[in-house]
Amino acid sequence: MERKALFITFEGPEGAGKSTQIALLRDYLADAGYKVVITREPGGTPLAEDFRNIVKHYHGSEPLYPATELLLFEAARVQHINYVIKPALESGAIVLCDRFTDSTAAYQGAGRTLNMDFLQQLNAFAADDCLPDLTLLIDLPVEIGLARAQHRAEGVENHNDRLEEEKIDFHHRVRDAYLQIAENEPQRVKVLDGTLEIAELFEQVKSRVTDALQRV
Ligand code: T5A
Image 1 (cartoon, helix red, strand yellow):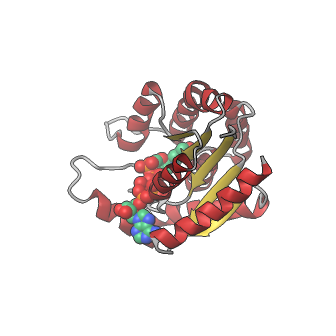
Image 2 (cartoon, rainbow, N blue to C red):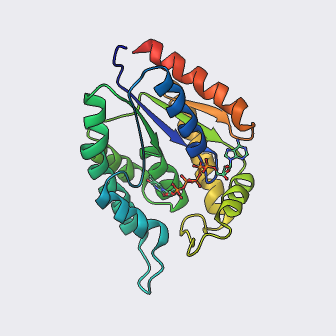
């Protein structure tokens, strides 16, 4: 089968169902003969996974400044892009990435209210022209997503996720920012209804990805 490099990112508020859809899509594309690489942010390399552990679970006596958190996400991204995403795309793979630069705009920009222009410059610096061909934004009411995430976390020892634990207003700002990004970039960002059942949502994911594959 012909190799078609394609960079697809999945975005959304907490518990939107990204990981679930990525796993289904990986199997579907692999069965169709494509080379597929799945990865996530923050993370994807050993060092970036260490940064992930800090930004998600650090509860030490020295609270993280929002700017420190931002720089850790960007530092993880630089490692991830250069060691995982770019090599995968150069090898002709379809890369499915759970969160990318839009997460930084939504969470650190809108959620933490950091300067959006500066943050977008940092995003561009870290991404170094490695930009998604397609972004699937799985949108849903924040209460539903948080309830799902909470349900899944029950029984997991030391779950304590710094971002999930933010106040509800934070999560509303995140969701609104995502929808604004989609409105600003309708060619790249496609909004899907995260309240649909898993199989029904996957039909929409497949349809968007099929369209994107026809364009490359
Ligand atoms: N972050 C990340 C930033 O602040 N800035 C950044 O720059 C970046 C890159 C990452 C955190 O980091 C933040 C955002 C995040 O807070 P994470 O653990 O990767 O942390 O968090 P999420 O990406 O939010 O991952 P989740 O696992 O919480 O959500 P998913 O992947 O969207 O959801 P999924 O598929 O795991 O499903 C959650 C639960 O819902 C069920 C699943 O079975 C599961 O139990 N579910 C459904 N239930 C009903 N209907 C459906 N359609 C369902 N789909 C899944």
